Length: 137
Image 1 (cartoon, helix red, strand yellow):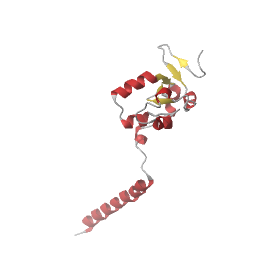
Image 2 (cartoon, one colour):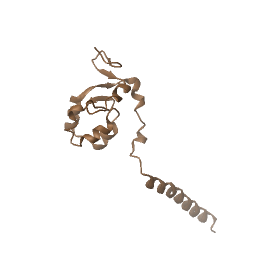
Image 3 (tube, helix red, strand yellow):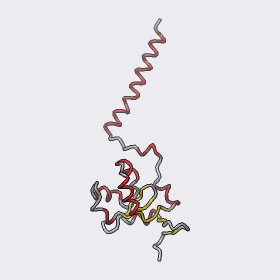
Image 4 (spheres, helix red, strand yellow):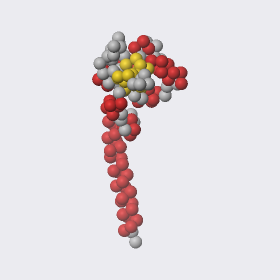
């Protein structure tokens, strides 16, 4: 019998709803979404070379960004394929899909406040220089 929310397609792919995946964030059952595919990494927690903490942080949610940022090897990707249990339901994909621009690591406050005045400052200097050139005789 199928769990609630789980659907199986004609080609045998199991689809899981986001709400169901979100429930799997315990040590007993840890699921992670990477590129819309659902992985059960429960048994792999202790073996993960990057430590189990990084997997636990992403548990029950989308770990695509972290997975890609680290740049996993072909071996790692093959191991991941063995842990794949299905895919995120197409109707739920928009809930985790983010535009590429926001995938940048958030800058810390000091850096962003620093750039907040740097760019207008450079523009002001440029405008002043252009003004002086145009008004000089």
